[in-house]
Length: 277
Image 1 (tube, helix red, strand yellow):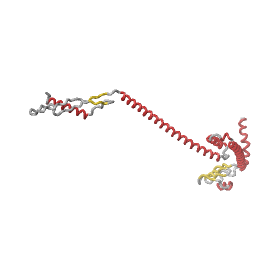
Image 2: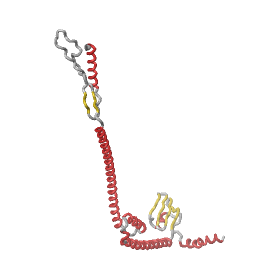
Image 3: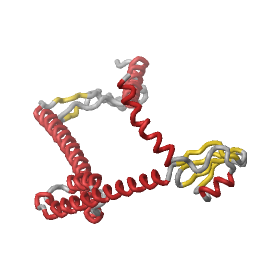
Image 4: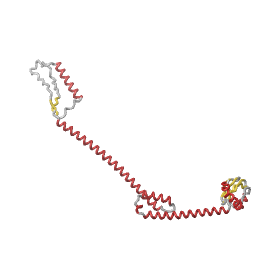
């Protein structure tokens, strides 16, 4: 019970002051003309002809059908207190901003004169200045950022050129390897052909005998009785030899085989029809 009274004590102390000093000048049930006469023209209004919400510096007034329905206003003292608090907050923020501005400028000037910082890469410097801009937005570093962006663009261009050169170099190396492989294959093939030619030169000579038949049209015919001339002597069929150096001759073509076959058949028929005595 004691704790309950302790909680209610601030409200009990504040109630009389509110009742004496914060009494609203416009009450529910007043007409809209009274509102205008006491508070002046509103800063804004929302609603329609039947219901409106009027916005004033000290608060809001709800009007329905031309009659005040609800009043949300603060006193002049509270309005002044809020304004004073807002001014204090603004001054505190301005002081903090000035402090950050001084600190940021000092840090910026220190980094711009630091030789070790200048020796870092453009990407590392850009990362630092981006973090710096988030912590000290009041400090102007637009020139430094513009210079670093130009350096990063140049580095990106050089990186792409180097990448393109690497690609071309790899393609050239691939073509060189392919050419070396082809040269090796050609050299191996040349050595194989030279070895085959050497074996052909060292191979012993082979004599190939191909029979050639010469047919006498008068062979096998009986001599005439009234002719005193002796019959012509039938030439002996003998094979002709030809010497072939190196590899044996190729097989006879179908035309040559047919010709030899016709010659052989004709000779056999002549001997059968006119047997030699």
